[in-house]
Length: 365
Length: 121
Image 1 (cartoon, each protein chain N blue to C red):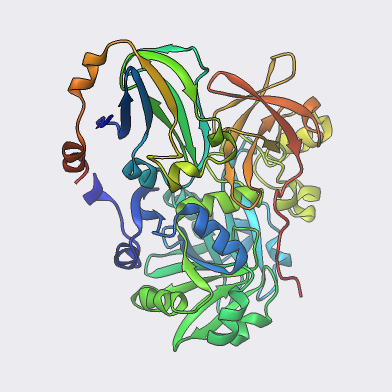
Image 2 (cartoon, rainbow over the protein chains, first blue to last red):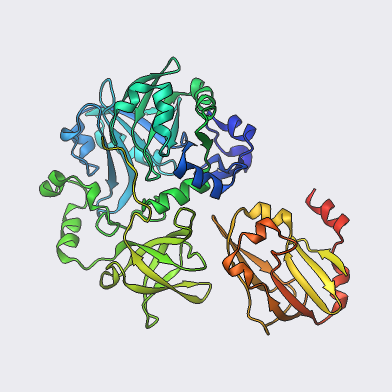
């Protein structure tokens, strides 16, 4: 199987760094380096971590933006030059096909970043829906790096000072070590940070340059997962999928107000009804003691009735305890509600908790 | 007193008819940072191959299987507060349980240290 896995432009570097390689979304990716998941997680929260996210799908869209907008929840007419939005690609039932970043960094049109596991379907859908109106160009020749953590800005101040003028969710074209790159001030760890799209021939060299900075350690998928979980962020295919709407996934904030008012996205009637009815399940955070509750653990009320399911769970190194998120019946969604999580047949007391579990550390100027 | 090893990366130190069981340094390193160990109740009877404990690392839960038949006579309560002992001292303070052996002849099928080192090489 291993020989059929795809490799990112940083693959040889991961191996050189001692990364433990595992299959992920069709790619051979580092789950951790010798520092270990806990060490990598804590380093990223304290200083800065470098993640290879080149497996994610990058694309450029040029043309009729209304045709693209009809598939997602962002208001593209309100997306100014140098701005980025987190948005959702929906199906006709309002279910979430994917979550993605859409931005207007520089040059013509829009820059999209979608999940690795869904990129082919996403791009095929966008191409079909915008045929004759716009052109989607898949970008297969660029690496994508994320530099995350409170000291990411100190690294960038040294290597690309202009990028530090951006605030959270801004983006632009810059020069980094003589290479033309696209940078956004964003990420998926809850920390301040930057995402950098680099021509693939320069990817490994720039990654090494970043890793050579005192603040920076390489971070694998394991810590990426625990960081995003503590930040209360959804992992596609786990915390949201085609069977969950943005209302259920507690992602109404990712739907532009203007779009909700116009009701012109897929599944709009179903979503409007759910917002009005207030009866659907909701995605919530959970804290517990002792054993971590993993994906698939049932959530029960104190009488033993099943009222939900855990969709992501594990140990939060910053929290120093287990954290989870999942879907729960509406009556139990209030913060502080006491429930049980069924871990290997044993009920473990848990509390519905506000997310993020760890406060966001975004730079807003 | 002698120490034996299983293919599932447990060590077993035998003292009379009591066997102390833990996981090897190799296993602990493979698992990564241990954050929780679920141990059986004292008095529980287990058969060789039964799941008797679960080790939770940051990333995943891994079952630990009984290397021999026996009765659990003691568990390492310190792991509750300090699960990291499994990483720090897997063959000392990171022990899991003590078994009263039902059938000492089962030990004969297990590896000695040299054979185990060969196994993980």
